[in-house]
Length: 127
Image (cartoon, rainbow, N blue to C red; front, side, top):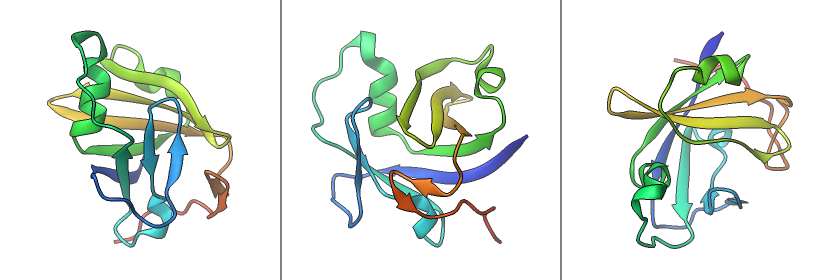
């Protein structure tokens, strides 16, 4: 199963309700609270990133589209994984891949009723 979850947009502006993701060193908003399912991503600092961290550079500088999947390992098998897999919080695991010039995030949820401690049940995106 692969189902649309959200779109991630990188910004340098803070937004209300941001949550800190230590592993990727960014602040994120809850896309479940945005009518267009947008997650704003704000890196703490925009440092120079060396070639060994090119995946992190892509994550901090390019938008991404995110999909909910049943099996993260199967979803990223054979893909160009640029960051992860990792557990940003207690709701599941994520990984970012670079495919056809686009950054794609795959999320395997273990809990669907919260996002970084905010009680916001996951629901399929509407039209």
